[in-house]
Amino acid sequence: MFFRIFALILCLQLVAEAGCLQREVDFSKYDTPLYGQIVDRIKARIAPRLGRSPLKHDRYFMIPFAYEDKGNHPEFSHSFISVIRVFGTNATPKLTEGLPTQGKYSGWNFEAFTISWLPADFMTNPHLCVFDGVGSRLFPERNECPVLPGKNFNLQQTIKLAVDDKSAVAMWGPYEIAKPGFDLGVRRKRLLDSGVIKYRADDRLYRKDKIAISCFHAMAGLDELYPNGGLFGTGFKMWGFNGTARVLLEYTGKAHYKKLLLDPVDVKKDRYGFVYAPTRNGRIPYDPVRFASAYYK
Image 1 (cartoon, rainbow, N blue to C red):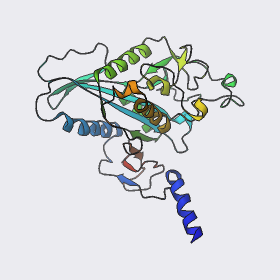
Image 2 (cartoon, rainbow, N blue to C red):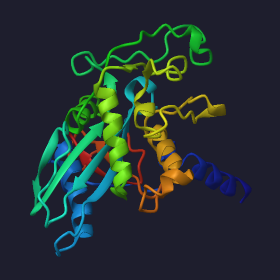
Image 3 (spheres, helix red, strand yellow):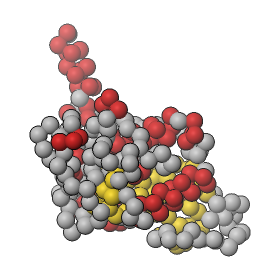
């Protein structure tokens, strides 16, 4: 009996890695490309909240994302976020200058953008230098990775990167936010697009002076560029799903953000996954999420 209880406790502790509890993977949209699955899920979760009556005012939503490989290696992990504005029905939409995605869905006009901060040439050279040098994970001054020009990629480009690596993708929300939250996101996007700040995955020596930041700090604290998080506040292990979860904890833990985030957040229960499957109804090489949809393209 003792060993059975011990085995059960161990199983619960290692559930994410060992898969002791049953996972549920939906293969019904297996033939739909991953980007299409994600867009469809966003639409399906926002549309009921808008209702059938004309919208009296604009509504705003954010969708946090992350992707990671098996083992959550930092060079194959990424955190990013999309923000959507749905315009009120009775007013002529006043579009936000410079946003790449603007259109119409089921009678609603909308605009959207994504904060996905990576090296500028990452689409053609997807080899991320995170830690290079003996002891560089502990001592940032030993990290020889270069500071690079950065680029803010859109959602479709970012999802392609995840598909190319057959990564697991996580999505939270959509969460409704107040207009000031949307405005903060727009300001952050414009800051990134300006070229003033560069990219570096390990930004411990560079973020304070606003020289270079990582994908995590590009989306974390939309009006405070440089929260830490991670082990002893160093930012260690703040990549992939952990990084985005840390951002959500920040959004829900600080009084200022509580005023901007209009929905309750449960970092674990709200997470939905998209996992790579080489064949329909076949084995999933990496499935770290309780509920997920399968993709192969």
